[in-house]
Length: 504
Image (cartoon, rainbow, N blue to C red; front, side):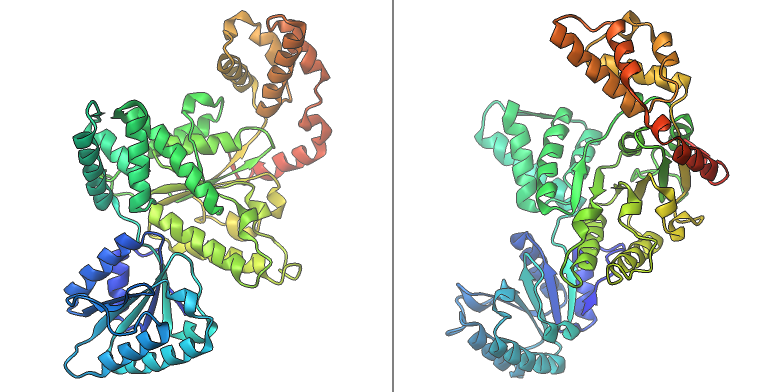
């Protein structure tokens, strides 16, 4: 079976047209949005001058320009027999046969056999069979004849049209609804809706408008929440929120690097430079690598998706690799996007693959090929704690634009961290002696400083008093930072990174 190269800069319509023109006998279209896909099929058939046939178990086989279905073709076997007869008929030109949910009948040996007979006829007549289904399920017998694509999700132009149609319908039948967005804000809204089906777009826009009877730029949060729920249910990719640069202390070199590349993914940029590929953040645990990734996505104005490496792995042969390919295909349809791979060393092993039958090595090969060959805009932000576990392929120059080392926060950064977390919890930082707090936390990570504040808040709540300096200094004294507990490991990590990375 041919796995379509989804890194090419094609939309769904272009990919399908190319496969039909390439004389594929079966094209398996994995798509949850049936209505949208069927419109695309019909449009392509008309453009390529193919007779358009479609089948479902409830309506049987039908020709687009005829009323009613062919006799007894609700039965899959009789439908294929009818299709063979149509294909043999001299008066009938090449056809495009769209079979809805036909995957459900491919566990029957008789159905598979007669479908192979149809394929022999298809080869002579240059017909094309499209199996349209929400999940991929194709028997091994048929894979040599088939191409598999995942698609049917509208592009930005289609999203804009759908959004305009939905708003027109809602405002026509519901008085008092208003839409207040500039052209630029509407574009951002359309970007946020990418990767959703037509029905999901309708649901998201309707929810955002009907909540408070107003659709404005603030409703992006509603769309992001809606989208996060959908992707979390799919399981492979997690939609994440982003953070402002002011919400992270330190990282001055990284912020400067990002400032030079701000706007790289804008559609109307005049910059002829290629968009950045991505960066790797490695370093001490708890020092803000994950938070930095959320800032990166915000600065670059990209939606952020986290690839959960643990969810990729499956006990079934070949399913782990298929999960990764499916995730990368989804990213291509979402592009431009920021992909976050947290603790990347846990997903791609440096071993020879004997422990897992070579699955990790095959995943590594697939991912590295995608990183090297992808043409859709995607910024990869990877984080790592155990640098020694990383395969050398990740560290070679050109794989990432830059590798940053995240060390324990210095004096200035620790003061910023105290300010951020105190202000976040409703306290004025000026009411505390920040210099004393900074002096008492020389080897504390950002996560440890945050936990000090949280623990002090619990202590103050227990005493039914306001948070004081005494509460904070008490919890500082009780904390043993990781830099002390694992000083040898952190020293070795710093020495390794000194000559190989740039300080974040």
